Image (tube, rainbow, N blue to C red; front, side, top):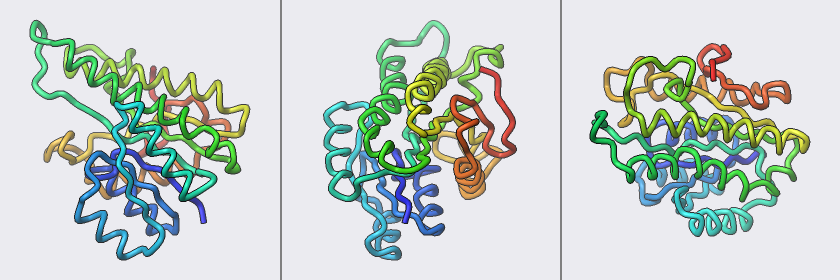
Length: 232
């Protein structure tokens, strides 16, 4: 039975990814800052022995180390790592951007995926044809940017795309595919009620696209709904 790690698993897309992976027969290690979540408890009850909920703050090296140490008790390999945890600071305006917002965004959106993937590297290498999916955003596309909005989020997602390229260069020789995926504008707490895609629809497209990734996709920036290449 394949096993996946999903960060930011307590709500939104992350929670739905956990649900759908379990429904497809996967075992899942769900990492999140808040582990006492009713829906996760319900999913654990519905899928005995297949969902492991563990505390994880991707902005903390100590938390990442503890999380991976606990994951090693559960499994000796990981077939799929989904770096989903994200932070968007709302209401940013030019002239009022502060250093903490920028630093926090980079810590969660770019540094977190790099450090968590690094910590999981041996578990990924042990699997055959493992995948790392970094949940990015078209807002991190430098070429597509022509307005000033959500600078902390946009800049940190651009950095995440570089993290994807770097990890692809390092891990592809070990048979691990690493890609950035844009899930679209999704109706989550982050995306808002007016977003284009429902959470279930977005998660389904993401999983379908992730599971279709092969070695030739490593280092790519992909729109999950239709597989098109997005500009860096």
